[in-house]
Every structure is written in C-alpha cells, then in structure tokens.
Length: 210
Image (cartoon, rainbow, N blue to C red; front, side, top):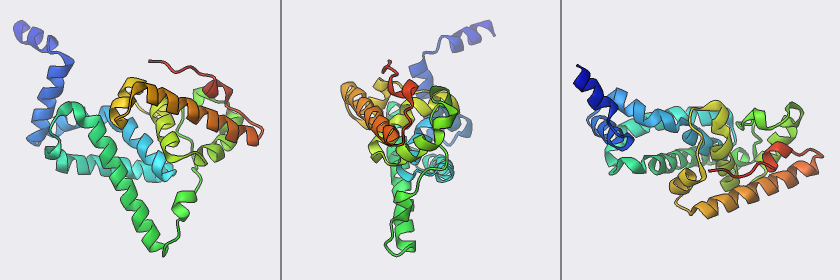
C-alpha cells in the first residue's frame, strides 16, 4: 500500500495529464472533468470577450463542456487542450452570433450590447468605477476584451489565472505580443475610462507579471 501511494505521489504533472487524457478518450467522465475544469476561466473569458454578455458566456461554458466531451477524440495531444478549447469556444460563440443575426434579419444588436457585469477582478478596481468600466470595456476590440479577461478575470471567478506564457500558447502568438496587447488594451481602456472622467488606476498601472 505504501509503495502504491509513493508511486502515485511520484507521478509528474505531465504524466498525470497524459493518464487523464487517455482515460478521457475512453469516456471516463471523472478524468475528462479533471482535464477541463482548470480551464473554465479560459472558456468564460473568451465567451464574454466575444459576446459581451455574462449570461450568454455562462451558457457557452456549459455548451463547451458538452461539445468537448463529445469531440475530445479529435484532440491529438493533451498539451494542446487550452488552444483547442479556445478554438471550440470561439466557434460556438460565432454560431450564436450568426443565429442572432439571422433571427434579427441582419441586425447586429448583439454585437453592440453592453455587458451587464464586468468579469474582472473587483479587487483591482473601485466599486464606483464599475459603471464606467462596463461601458469602456464594451467599447474595446474583441481581442482586447478576451486578453484582459484571460489575464485578470480568473483571479476572482475561477481557480486558474493565466500567465502571459500560457496566453501566448493559447492564442498562438509570442509572449512579447501578449504583453504588447495587454499594454495596448489597458491603455485604450484608460482612454475610454478617461472620457467618462474615471480611470481604474490599479488595473492600468499594474505591471505585467509572469
């Protein structure tokens, strides 16, 4: 028994990932959830960044769980899971947008809707700034909304906070490109906030770590 416990404790994270991945491919639900759950924040960040609606983003989160379970056999390498989930989430979001456009006969109201809730770590901002931040965040380009969500939102709402290196791997860009995009996103957010005579200084001035 002691030998078995020692063997399990000696398993490296990479080996454990491969074990769970192989079991998930065989339909083991516990292993599948152990793989997916740490990336819930990533899925939500991407969904919110595209749809700008927290309720729709939460719905997408559950849809991705279902779709990922059905199609995980399409994933060839376990270490590509975050990038695969990113792509899967984007596809599901754009399907919703296309359906909304058809339902509204070409109107793109869903793309202009302001977010009702800002999924960014509220520790980094003051309560009275929320209204202005909601408006400003909704005016940012989609790529900026997504990367801000991936970097900051997970600190409060989910268990995993993504580093610049992890974001680079998910978005298939360099770490320097991630840092540059974060810098530009925060700068543009500051401009939008300044137009409303409010600035989330703790977020804008925060350094890029990791």
